[in-house]
Length: 437
Image (cartoon, rainbow, N blue to C red; front, side, top):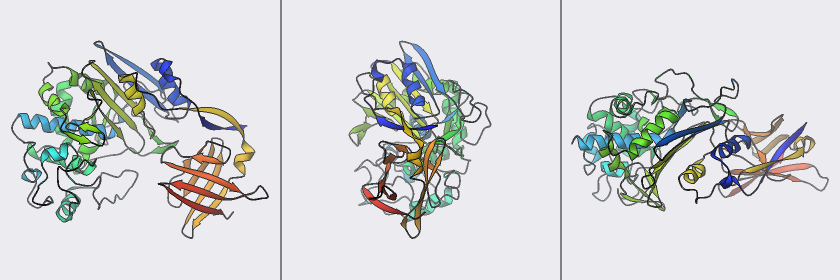
């Protein structure tokens, strides 16, 4: 048997059909399954390829359910916009106004965090609370509740003035979702169903772990099956990433962004308007704005990636859902505007299995940190102390990369052509590990 490695090649996808483009994502190992929905010229078309589960081989379709991750944030800001139109909340008001007295938000230089700061990622709050220490890292959000949130906010010192800079924050958006639940004293799940899902007929959209449904995809980090993320009514960061949905429901949500006659149109329009700069782009309430007219958001959880976007000038929308940790944002942008390029994919070539066998062993980077390299029918994998096993992919005979994290590994041979060490390249650093067996 022969093992494969991947080399970068120039993509020719721009000349391919949508079917060919998504098939390539699966064929080249980007994801086990993918579904794309495109709304254009008043019509919706779905395209899917691959499997929802590597064991059962159930095919992905437009009704397959995926975790949509941070696209949830656009639902949170939409509900906040609806409450603002009902004059139950004001984007100009301080967020503290809507919190319990025991939960004290930090201020800086006399400036308080407003609802708009939370909705535009300008609150000054960090990406995650510093006391976020999940009991189960594979299902991280369920046990972060009101007591933990209150303790963190009441003890945190802002490093910048609210409103001064953009910093993407799951904490900030989770806090906004928590505030939404307090306005009408509903759980996030109940608010979502009553305010958005029922009016739009989104019957298969819900909070992860709160409903048993068929056709739920399994998520994968590389080829490792990941736990589904779950959230309950006590989870206070649900508004940052808790929704599960399918392509058909998500397309209802996106088409509603374009439809000025739907009952939620006023609230949705509020979320689309540019409010602030956001790292080379603009940001509305939750939505990012690229090239002035591409309004979008992406999402990711432990085993899923997603993209949602629309162009109001073209009356066009795109949803992409995958069950892997490799994103497809480039495909989403390309489908909205074919002048935007696709990333390079990787072409399969043959490499003899005996070469890979020489890399198998344990490499000691530090007395308490080592990396084990193993071989299977699928190729090489690495596993560091206390971490999951991850596949690695060759870009040359001795250099490999990971898909799930931005890291590379190079195997070094001595004068006798024996593998003596590896070098781990990650976050701009290089770490050597001597082969010890």
